[in-house]
Image (cartoon, rainbow, N blue to C red):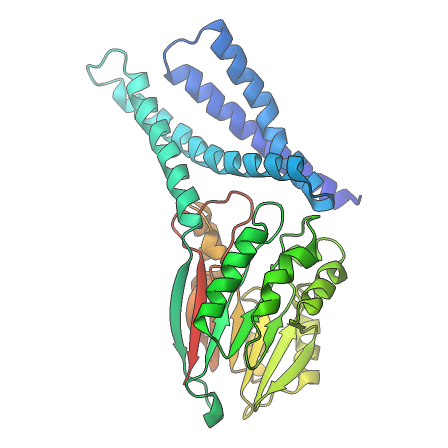
Length: 369
């Protein structure tokens, strides 16, 4: 393993250890005195739980069996719960200071108790909300669009993250939801898989039944490129989905372009690919590119519409703030960059904690005008 991945894992592990210690320290300082057995149980949890997610995620990248799926599922849920317990612990200290001025004896548990209870309720809501997949209706008006395309619909499903957590049942649910829309064309702009060791052919099987009249098109996201992308793209192709790897497919007068995640991280590769594919200013074109990146280059190349995902719209608070800082208004929804229309989906699935708070999972029904 290279040094950078090891360093990244070490940093994540150190942060998780520090966060768990802070939750533990806040709990014992703000709650009623704990007995020896309770204190030992909490200390053991603080030492064990920070390692469970990283270990199960690393094993899940290579293997897939019931034990790994259960361990990863538990640790992913716990990671989301710990996120909100950490926020609750942060709030305890300033509110605890203020509560000392109140005539309540003892004051501290009355601060920590409601905050930690609220954290657990937030995590529970996030779990339920992440499984409630919304249908978004979007209308896009593109210049020079052939008459045959006006009124046609596309289904956009990004970031399914099929693997050890979002398994075959989730895939069937998404495929069935898309099929009910009866779209003319389907777009999947990356992270169809989560990069795990789960069987990619089995996970892609439900999508063989879609068969929209104009086809289904896909580009890789960052999770398919954690290891060998061909492991996933070959399974996608066997499911009857067209993989666009720096390629163009002309569909009834509209060019469908695709740039894989790895190439999209290099501006010069994006520029050269778009020049080679020749989407001219008068030629309507749709680009699949996993993240809402390289917008100046894409607009300059004359692309009409870019379809992306990746951001999850932040997936759960407070990371919603972070994605907004990175991607600005292009974090989510339909926006314009000059003459280029950009739609960024919040995605249908989740990665890490199977929770959403402040965001919603979606499948998009896009109508062209």
